[in-house]
Amino acid sequence: MEHKPAMSIVPITFDECEPWLLKKHYARRMCPISYAFGAYISGKMVGVVTYGTPPSSTLLKGVCGEEWKDKVLELNRLCCDNSKNMASWLVGQSLRLLPKPSIVVSFADAGQGHVGYVYQATNFVYTGMSSKFIDPKVRGLEHQHHATYANGKTFEQLRQEFGDRLYFVERSRKHRYVYFCGSKAQRSLMRQALRYEVQAYPKGTSRRYDAGGEVESQGILWTD
Image (cartoon, rainbow, N blue to C red; front, side):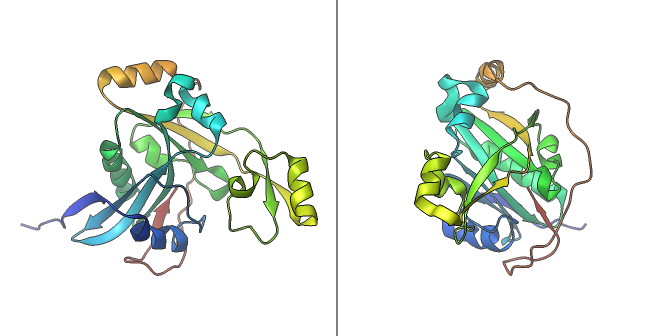
């Protein structure tokens, strides 16, 4: 009888997930991380998923209101080897390891060709597209998220600080998914508090790619 390789998911450190996020994820930068998990097959890491507090106070309050804002996490990086099935397994298993109750929000970037099939496979609810925004950028600081240098500042304050280095780009719209972690009663309360309209899952072609960096394992990557 053929034996399948042993699969497991465990908490990992910031240093352990860093190579995957910098070399394999399309964003090529780190993000705020509260919880990180690695997927292993026969002791070899084949993927990572990370969760952190969203930098947007509007999002924190906007999902389920003021009462639940401290329970909101964002699934902010997902990167794994080989297949969609591996990605959905990694997400599904990691959700079980998060503190309860938690409200998990994740975005599939339409500008990167992502639809969010991983979240559909793991029973997230779909709440439509993100709003249209323009983001401030600073020449020479493109590697940083705009919240790093723009948090709480008006566009005029940024112009005074950075002068001609400041420019603006239209943010690509993203599919927004929400998942509730907790007991049956907790999930019911959070679902009732949800401020976004639940919509039918979107469809379309989802893009896969290999970002080309060297990490523990290689091959076609599934990212969101």
